[in-house]
Amino acid sequence: MEIRTVGVIGAGQMGNGIAHVFATSGYDVRLNDISQDTLDRAMALIEGNLDRQVSKGRLTAEEKAAALSRIRATTDIAQIGATDLVIEAATENEKLKHEIFRSLAPHLAPKTILTSNTSSISITRLAAATDRPERFMGFHFMNPVPVMQLVELIRGIATSEETFRTLEGVVERLGKTAASAEDFPAFIVNRILIPMINEAIYTLYEGVGSVQSIDTSLKLGANHPMGPFELADFIGLDTCLAIMNVLHDGLADTKYRPCPLLVKYVEAGWLGRKTQRGFYDYRGETPVPTR
Ligand SMILES: CC(=O)CC(=O)SCCNC(=O)CCNC(=O)[C@H](O)C(C)(C)COP(=O)(O)OP(=O)(O)OC[C@H]1O[C@@H](n2cnc3c(N)ncnc32)[C@H](O)[C@@H]1OP(=O)(O)O
Ligand SMILES: NC(=O)C1=CN([C@@H]2O[C@H](COP(=O)(O)OP(=O)(O)OC[C@H]3O[C@@H](n4cnc5c(N)ncnc54)[C@H](OP(=O)(O)O)[C@@H]3O)[C@@H](O)[C@H]2O)C=CC1
Image (cartoon, rainbow, N blue to C red):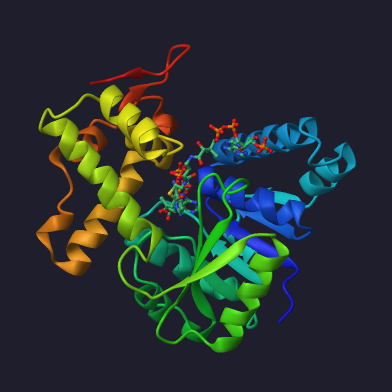
């Protein structure tokens, strides 16, 4: 099946990155969020990131203008229904995602493929609550989307071969690389990455090191591009906690228990870069560790 139009639901950091890469690859994009402010912020961020690509010579000014003109921002979910491919990229909360698919259902064209960019939630369970489990898949982009090469493709139990092949073709057209993962909690990347971040938080919680010394150790001692606290703040601590909870509940193993310090930060609303405070405080000129 040929995909021309794409609906992206949720215009946070993932939604704006996904809209960006689809628009620069020639797809028409409708970007949806419940908040007009979030949509305005997303469009400004996309423009800033496109400018960065122009200044590096990776895109011409004409290509930037064409990409921007292909993105239509809307708070009306009904406008997402007629697209060929929907990518749900709203907050990592299963109940919310079910509600989104439910409110989208009356507006959907029969051919539309539904996907979720979820980091951890069961694709089979999300699919089973829609009218088209065979046309439903996990479509997991990595952050920052314009930079990261990988897209995880996750089949639910009922996903058809045609749906899988169509999404493989889309990943190829985006110039990215697909990896197929089975539908188990948090799939591949986050099954490994988020427990590592959780372990870094335990290492801090138990006083083995400070935010700074743990980040420096992983950057200089293991050549990670970001330390675990920089990365956790970048992903969003609410998302990290949601993923740990899915692992803990779904695999019923105490090795996945979320660190109480992670819970405390989320309860404080210190969610990382998106709220300007997490394991670092971003309100000044340079980030300052909060522990
Ligand atoms: C939670 C989940 O479900 C799954 C996940 O996504 S987990 C998170 C996965 N992501 C990671 O692990 C990211 C780890 N960090 C990195 O790889 C790097 O720090 C980074 C790529 C983010 C930044 O790299 P850097 O070398 O420090 O910065 P910088 O030189 O400024 O940027 C490198 C390139 O990325 C671009 N870039 C950086 N941030 C960007 C953003 N937010 N949006 C668009 N482009 C961006 C820059 O323009 C630059 O582009 P060129 O190569 O064309 O010059
Ligand atoms: N952060 C990361 O590194 C990665 C995240 N993901 C996954 O992508 C998804 C989005 O994460 P991320 O972008 O980081 O989260 P953000 O918190 O940055 O963005 C989520 C967005 O969804 C919006 N939203 C909430 N409810 C609705 C709704 N009913 N309809 C439309 N939009 C809604 C939020 O609006 P408001 O702010 O107004 O509530 C917000 O703008 C999650 O499933 C996450 O697990 C996947 C890969 C990497």
